[in-house]
Length: 95
Length: 469
Image (cartoon, rainbow over all chains, first blue to last red; front, side, top):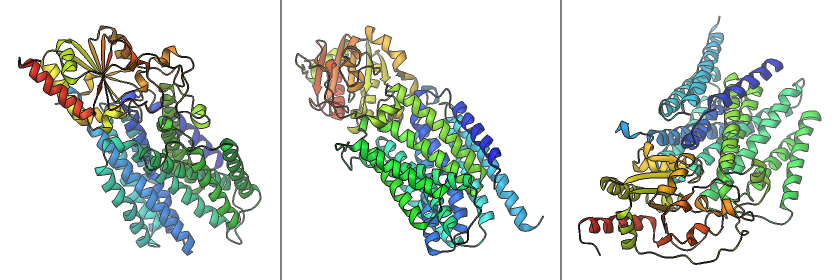
C-alpha cells in the first residue's frame, strides 16, 4: 500500500507533467494525440491482470476476465489506430 | 533476496521504465516531426509492463489471463488495422470506453473483495478512490459507447425529452449517494451492484442529449476521465505505473479538451448541459443559391492564379480526398498557387482533416491553419469549398442570434469567387442555414464530391488541351 500523502504528491506531479508535455501541441496533432493518450491509459491492463491473478470466486474471475479483455482491447486497438494515423504525417521534403 | 522478491523487484523496475517511456512518448507525439517515434516508444513501454506483470501474477489463473488478453487484443487489432480513416473518431471513442470499463471492473472486483465477510480495516481513502475510479470509469465506458454509436450512425444524433436535465441530475445524485454509502456506511454486495447500475446509467443519460457537433469535445473529455479512473484504481491496487500514466493522461486529456473547446468556441459546460447541434435559430437569409455547371467552374479555375481549397467532413464521407488531390496537382502543374485551408475542427475532431488529407498524400506544408490562411482569402481568386459548411458560415461573425455566433470561421466569404461543391441544398452538421451559399460571388456545384472533382479535372484538361467550350 502506498502512503496517502506520498500518493497525493505523485498525483500532483503527474498532473503537472501531463499538462506541460503537451503544452504546445499544434492543432494538426490533436486527433493523433488524443488517440495516443487513449493508448497510454491502456496500462490499466496491468492492474486488471493482477486483479484476475488474485481472483478466487467465479464472480471475481468473470469480472477480472472482463477487465483484462477490455484493457487489452484498449491497449491494442489504441496502438494500431494511433500508429496508422501518425504514419501518414509527412512533409513534402520526405518524399 | 528470494525468488518472489526478485520477481517483484523486476516488475516494479519495469513499471518505472514504462512510465518514463509513456511520458517521453506523449511528449514526442505532440510534435509532427517526432510523433511517429513517440507512439512506438509508448508501445514498447506497454509491452515491457505487460510482460513484467507475468512475474507478479504467478501461475494462478494464468490460462484465464492469457485467454482474456487474446480475446481483447485479436479483434481490436484486426479492426483497428482495417477501419477507414474517416471512422477514426468513433474508434478512439470505443477503445477509450474499453479502458474505462476495465478500470470500472477493477473497482468492482476490489469493492466486492472489501464486501467479503470478515474484511475490516480497509482505509477510507482506499475505498474512496476505488468508488471514485469506478464511478468515473463507468461513466466513461457507457458514455463512450453512446458517442461511438452516434458517430457511427447507429443511433439518432440527439435524444432529448422534457425534464431530461432533472432526470440526469437525479441519477447522478443517486449514484453519488450510493458511492458515499459504500465509503462511509458499509460495503454490501447489493449496494455495489446498485452503485454500478446508477453509474453506468448516468454515462448513457449524460451523453444522449449531446449533439454530433460537440462529440469530439466529449470524446476527449471521456479520454481524460478514463485516465483519472485508471490512476485512482492504480492507487487501490498499489501499482505506481497506473497512477502516473493515468494521471498524465487525465491532465493532458483535460488540457486537450480545453484546447478543442476553445477552437470550437464552446465552453465545456455548454457542451455538457446545453442543447446544441439541433439546428434552428438565426436570422432568415434572403436571396437564392446560384448553381454552376462543372465546365464553367473549370474555366474559373483555369483563369485563377491563387486557389484555396476548403475541405470539410463531407469530402471525407464522399471519399473525395484522393480525387481532390489529383485535381490540385493538375492545378499546381498549371502554375497555380494551391493551398488547403483547415478549420481547427474540420472533420470530426481537431486535426482529423489533416489525417484524412495526409492519407490522400497531400504534403503537410500545403496545408494551412485558420489563422495563417484567413488573411489570404482577400487575394484568392477562387476558393473551393467541398463538404464544409458551418466552419465557413459568415453568420458566425455577423448574426448574433445564430447558434454558432462567435465561433471562429474561415473567411471564405472574402474570396473573389467561391465554388461550393455540395450534394444538395441541406444544412450542415449544426443544422444552420449558411449565408455564404447565398452570397453574390458564390456558385453552387451540386454534385457528389468525388464526381465533382472528376468532372472539374476532365473539364480543366479539355480547356488546357485547347478544346474548350
